[in-house]
Amino acid sequence: MYKREKSARIPLTRGLLSILLLSIGLVHLKRNFVPLNSVGNSNNALDSYTITPFLRNVDYNLASKTPPPMSFGERKRLKVQSHGGISSRKLAWDWDWIEDISSEIGCPDVDSDGIHADDPKRYTDIPTAETWNAIYRAYHATVDPNNELVSATEYQNSWKVPIEVKFQLPEGRGVYAKEFIPKGTMVWSSTSRNTATFLSPQDRREFIKYLMKDPKTRHLACDVRNWVDVIRPPGMKTFVVCETFDEAVLLNTAWGQNKKYQINLDSQSLSLSADNPDFDEYDCYENEHYFAARDIQAGEQFRIKYGS
Ligand SMILES: C[S@@+](CC[C@H](N)C(=O)[O-])C[C@H]1O[C@@H](n2cnc3c(N)ncnc32)[C@H](O)[C@@H]1O
Image (cartoon, rainbow, N blue to C red; front, side, top):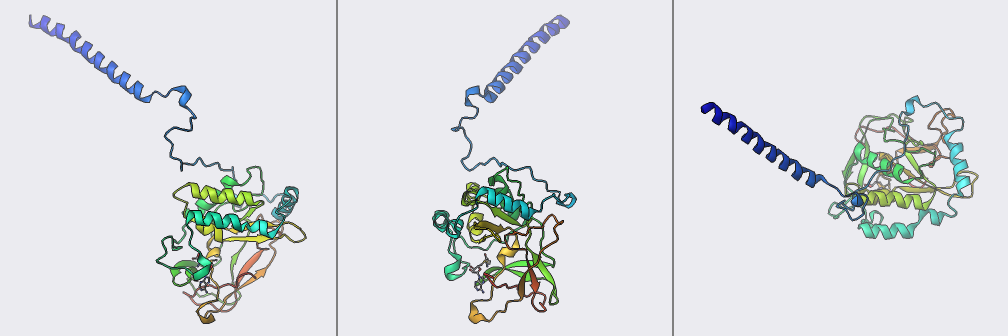
């Protein structure tokens, strides 16, 4: 009797368990079911700031890179020529657009009255390797992917001496020597690795817009809009927009404070050898290198002459 009762209860328990498992399965299936016609629907729940990085397949292993038959500079010149370059300096600066976008982002004007710590969007962030890499990614995601001018490949330390970036009023961020540097020491070099090239104002717009799309990089758009430079490669009629993506853009100058500061870095144009992958005779900064113009003490701020 006892045995029969027990054996009758087992199928009943099993049956209830199966019904329970089946119900759980159905609920799970319903939750995860995505109708096919909703795939790719732009009205889905994606945050409008979410961006799918469209990164070029860049060979980051530059150390093992065999020098290309043509130097970076030669390729750049051909590219600028085939592209038509940017016809005028005014167009290359594209100030109207930069001004528009600056007011749209709410960028404070760093040039009019210096940098203030109480500025709501103050330029006090000390960039880290992560900050620079976000900028490099935005650049690679927005320049023409067929452009074989892989400049500004990846953030790396371009300083030949130990440095520190600090914020100090009234100049804002600046670059400081961490050790004593004897006169004549090479301190920093501009190369195709740390300097981005934009062959059209549109590329630069896309780059800044890309930074603006992501809340994590939006504030960087204010910074990068100021770091731009425009050059005309030697022997060419058209212009190129250049932008260095490392601490060199944070170098202050000597003006202000009754000119009590002294320029302590000299800029010299010096070609690297043609078999160096960084070689670029049409470099945005014309192979600019900074040298200690005099002995520089540990803790002293580096200062360059602007516009030289
Ligand atoms: C290339 S940025 C240098 C980095 C800048 N300090 C920052 O934090 O972004 C140039 C700006 O730095 C500031 N600056 C540079 N040298 C200065 C000086 N001697 N006195 C005051 N401000 C200076 C000016 O606002 C200038 O427009």
